[in-house]
Image 1 (tube, chains in turn red, cyan):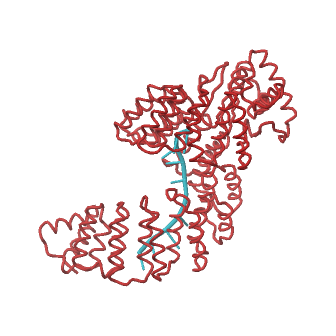
Image 2: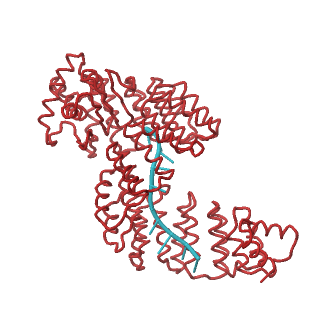
Length: 621
DNA sequence: ATAGGGTTAG
């Protein structure tokens, strides 16, 4: 055993804080000639303690010179994994190519390591898949370690829709006989669930002999990420009935599901679940809980949770959750104050922070502040992305500065996406600008031909300027393509009860009573001065039908039910999947005054707090 | 000698 190795071992056992790489560079600096008799285990130790790209490269070159790397796939794999860890897949690949070139290597191990290196590196999905395909062409067999890496690549969001390829590889795993391996199955469940292919995910999941918490979590998060949070709740009950115990990750996913649904009661239930099970509340879970309280209308608790974090432990993500929470409730000034405090406390804002701040400015109509913020982000070298442009266009557009919004779009250094044009289209609908709206719509129909919302917006713009012919054409087009206007849906929660209402709902068990209550409310509203806004209905109806249709909007049914069923003075919490229409917004303001109740509504875009006849959004939404 | 799940915007 060479001297250096003995010394290293000795030193390390006595002083474990000493990094052998440091000693090694010391040795090189004094020209100790240890390299010629260095051994595999010597390098093994060095590689294990390499703590950065520089030290890795330092070890790499003598390894090549001595020729040891060509003899040891073990060392080669360590180098590959090391380079991958420090974000250098290209260097990893050169080691791999060198080894494959000189060794005629047929074991799968090195290939797996290299595929993993690509799978973990950002933006290397294509390389990972290409290597997998090369592996098969070179007659090296993929094994139970290979498939999970490949499925993870197919599941990764940067890789677009790789689900088809995933299915092909799934077939290959079946033929190779690895499809009932626990890890392969878990990776498959994750991949299918991630892409919302619940049938296939379920098929793999159901036939797993050993169904563990990881696979359950994959299914649950798949549902939540694909907008099916209520399915996640159902599955969670199923999990409870199984013999698998939920863990802190399960709780995190479920808290996020409640945030999505806007259900404070369920959110609290899962918070208690975390406490009862004594789960460690790490930073992520803490943030998820804060976010849930903010998104369920309970800003006070979100704020308290934020304050319970030791100030020195507050990082960008905890600030981001708080800032976005205040922003979506329309508290523009407070949001900007928090943004300043964040910077004063030395936390660097990131792209998410700026999205939240810009959107807060948009909600609160703080145009100048928003413009400043957009300039500031570029000074802080946070590159504006499409979502930031979308927020600014939204902000300018809502404030009626449509031309400025269009000018900004034209100045963008990359092609605007659907979010940007969508913001402009919405602004055109609010301000009734048919010409600009047409420009935005043409782009959107090209970019997202299947997105129903844009057609609905454009037809609203035509309708507002009485272009019935064009309204008809658009509707006919949608009908031909089988596109349906998304159904409005409102949920009201009180005590232990949750009730959902569609537009003109006749399925709710108490719909007849609710309809009677709505009629009573309509009379009270008129007496108080509310004028029904008939523009919120389809044009080809009789006038009286229009008024009736307005009264059956889902939020009116839900609020009527709330007024019937809850004690006077109690705050009413509503969640709606789409934006509130003008007529409902006005009606809710009057109702909050007539019944002297606070009504909190989370619509598809933001919160409205109705109290004493006014709304926290100042009619700006 | 290599393997699986998670939050934050709109």
